[in-house]
Image (tube, rainbow, N blue to C red):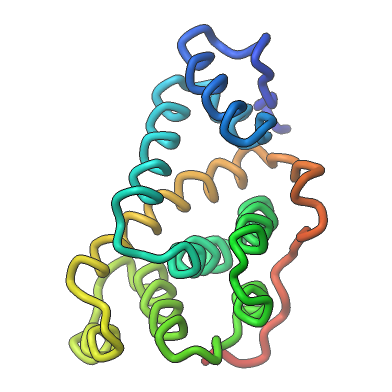
Length: 190
């Protein structure tokens, strides 16, 4: 039984409404994920603030940030976030082959983006316990210690939404349906 509802501006707790109004202005509609988050004003406010920091304060390009967010969502098997961030990546003109590689869990042809994907996947899989050669491979393509910490920030951000979507069984919004997703069966890992 799913005990969560997808709140609207009208049904949400009063403390959540200012954040929901801002999100609605930004997106043009209220995404279902934020309707679920609205149950907890702390969560909806914290997630919105963290998302703003990721977009405005990290050193990642829009494509690099989507690599982090899609890789985390892939590893956490989040159908909602894979659909949502595939839509965002498409809107941000991330190359289609990059989006498809991320959706398939396959290597990206661009060496720098692939290093970012592998580093992000490893952070998720190993819970941050990185080996020296993994750190060195990330640094060798031009990323920095700052980027390492910002990957962790992106993983934390997506883990909040991935786990919430698992718990709440958040329905994928109509706006994201074009990129509906379910995890492919992988025969080998790269």
